[in-house]
Image 1 (cartoon, helix red, strand yellow):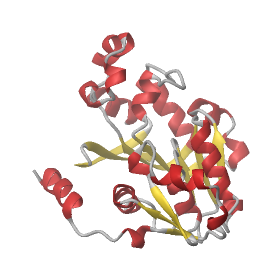
Image 2 (cartoon, rainbow, N blue to C red; image 1 turned 180 degrees about the vertical axis):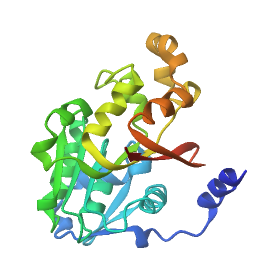
Image 3 (cartoon, rainbow, N blue to C red; image 1 turned 30 degrees about the vertical axis):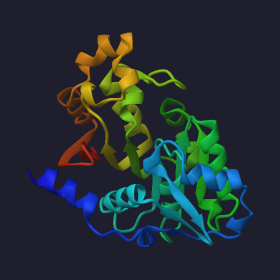
Image 4 (spheres, one colour; image 1 turned 45 degrees about the horizontal axis):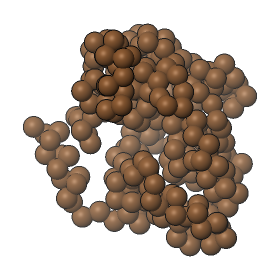
Length: 251
């Protein structure tokens, strides 16, 4: 009940996106128009933001997410890994913190990676930011090249693709334990996990594939949580945004 009420309040409460803006940019007016258009109005909509003067101004959906997940960062953030960075807001937002020495975003979408790299050229803390086209498995094999494991990692609306695959990448593994073993190889602190954990909630195109039908019976909250608990202490928080929020603290 509390989780439902909290979700409703998050949707209707007054919200000032400016308080969640990401500062530290310069000459954003020199960005190509197609970049500004892409970050403000493209898929996925919950990663949309506007380029305004010297900052990135999140949409209400993104700003609400940023405010919610920030609560679970360490008091002094030293490093952050976004395991599916999309348009990069969380990476830049972390890198502007004075205590954050490095922020890495990985993704497999060439378009959004190119956007992030253009924004990096206008970011005053660009030396702290890395944007890479890597899968989780590829990153795990070369984590030392990025300064070693990360203190904080975001795994947001991504787990279904690690298990089932996506149009641009095959599944990492159909073994939940193997997926969390790889995650543990890149994060020594806390993973903020916010994902669809039942087959009926994953994207329709996944449910309707033969693989979805075959492997869906193994895609349950119990199976996922059990595997995670082999590598992390799992703290379940109230459902938020329609999906579970788990804090995974490395063992």
